[in-house]
Image (tube, rainbow, N blue to C red; front, side, top):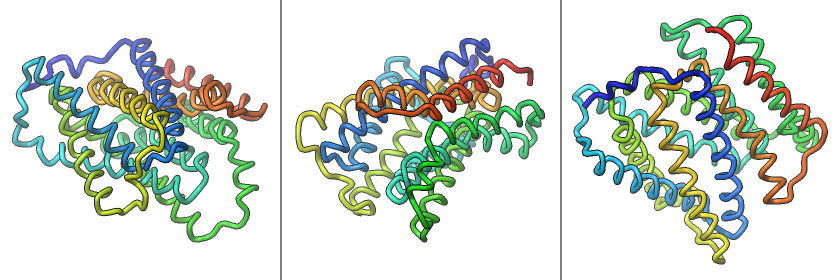
Length: 305
């Protein structure tokens, strides 16, 4: 069943607002996850919980709206590939975090808007303008300051093999997410949004459950020690289900090649909520970086294609 409204783009201010909302909720999700991890919860347990909750929520939406779960003949392989891309993105990101500082992993993971623009261009889409290229470069520079990468690198010392592997995992995370966004926007845009998202999250759930049972990530299925950890797992599951549903249901209408850099507001929001909830502080350089990121996001989002 085709989604006739999927190809009509949202007005620019609506698309930007939705992506800023996604970035904010994702930042809160990371805060809740940190609370759960600090209480002993395993990484894979968190992924499985949020995927299960998202799957149940999406299944309820699909049944309530009366959508058919049958995939058109040409959608099956692309849908499987989308689910695997999202699953691999999660696995690579957590593998990177296990080997290198979280700040560097997030910075490399934030390369996906630039990779998406380049991939879209390489596959026949619009070529990024010089202005867009300059703004993207400024966004990366701002993220370097926001995440205090100079301080992280100076504190790390000499780079070893684990550092190199972690950097590769983080870059692969951004690459897999980029391919997933492109597939959703260009090969599955005619598929009903909730159905596409349901199949995607089901593939993620199955993949991550298999990885967890195989003990690929030692301690990945550890349970929280107290109710605080369980509360963190519950909150991150709700927030992930919300952001995942909004993103993958509305992707065909968000003009992602142009507006994806708006999602780079997530690291800035993470710093704010980390300060409010986790008592984490940030310095003047990080504030400057946040201003650069937000300023370039606004300029890029409202610039002409």
